[in-house]
Image (cartoon, rainbow, N blue to C red; front, top):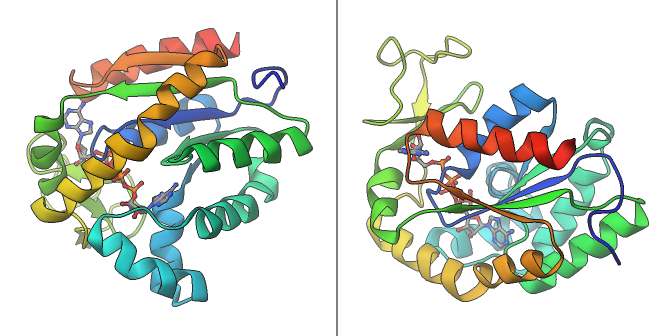
Amino acid sequence: MDASRVSPVNLILLGPPGAGKGTQARMLEDRFGLVQLSTGDLLRAAVAAGTEAGQRAKAVMEAGDLVSDEIVIAILRDRLSQADCAGGVILDGFPRTTVQAEALDALLFDMDQGIRAAISLEVEDQAMVERISGRFTCAGCGEGYHDIHKTPAVAGVCDKCGGTEMTRRADDNAETVASRLSAYHAQTAPLIDYYDGRGVLARVDAMAEIDVVAQELSAVVRQATA
Ligand code: AP5
């Protein structure tokens, strides 16, 4: 099957933990009218809601390992079938294994859709711990921040929604980051070749400042959607 054959615009953001997938997906959402679909966020919501899938995923996520393909594919399938995804999605954190990539191909084929671009955010491993340990998020709207690289204009107040409750993730600690990085290299990095082989891969230097990465990414998306 030709994975790039039809609209709507479905994009994949690939990259290790802390590469900036969530930060950039939210920017692309605003700029291109696409829906961010983060399996990490969906799993954290399932954990918080205490669903069966969430209960099974909780300890795995806390250890920095990958949740089973079966659980993640089911969650993704449900979310992708919702009406707001019909205009196109930015997949953030999915697929993460070859099994997930093949399931996504099959799912999109059934919907008469494909992948327009898979964008690899390229970063050095040593930047990850610093990025992740400084991350915090607005509890109200999910906007992401960093202690050094992206601070709110007014300390403690979300630029986007004015919320004042900020949270830090349970898995954002040095020990878990090491496990998440090895899971990435062992199971997710091979997907770069997978999408290269399908002719939809683009690479973006994600070591640059957030705004610079955003500009480069927007250019790639404009080209992919032209
Ligand atoms: P998930 O939530 O997907 O986490 P992750 O992949 O580890 O990625 P992160 O959210 O940590 O990083 P990000 O790339 O989004 O970076 P961000 O933009 O926040 O997954 C969590 C867990 O869920 C997994 O470990 C696994 O257990 C499970 N899971 C999820 N999906 C799964 C799947 N498909 N299969 C199996 N299991 C799954 O940026 C990080 C920080 O850096 C922020 O503070 C930001 O402000 C800052 N920053 C961003 N860009 C820059 C820049 N260019 N320069 C400086 N700082 C920057």
